[in-house]
Length: 145
Image (cartoon, rainbow, N blue to C red):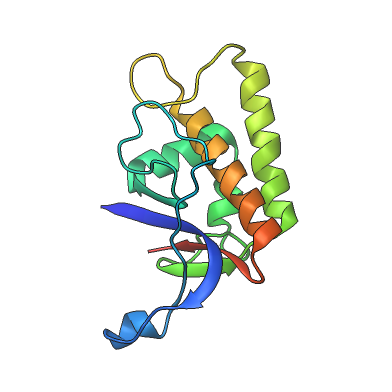
């Protein structure tokens, strides 16, 4: 099982399946200037990340962001599926975690496979897309399906 995470503008999903249509989502987009990480065969330069439940849990604990995503009262992923407003405080927490990881692992290269650091890659992806959504979207959100 896996999560599909989307960071971007809040939109309503087109009708079709009533359960899905009633749920807010986020528009999927690609940006040529977005970071891409070696070994990341799924995300590319898009605001959509697909990640296994176990991999995401390990990432959240390792990065110190478990509460940001799973706090029962405020977590961005406290409901699945879900869609939560994105704030500058969320970006600040991700940015602090990214900087802490970089300091703890000097010279680490973000990416997937071999000696690459997948935690640093996910933090870089979150940082870039959260900053973009906050700067460009009227209603920035973090959605998971």
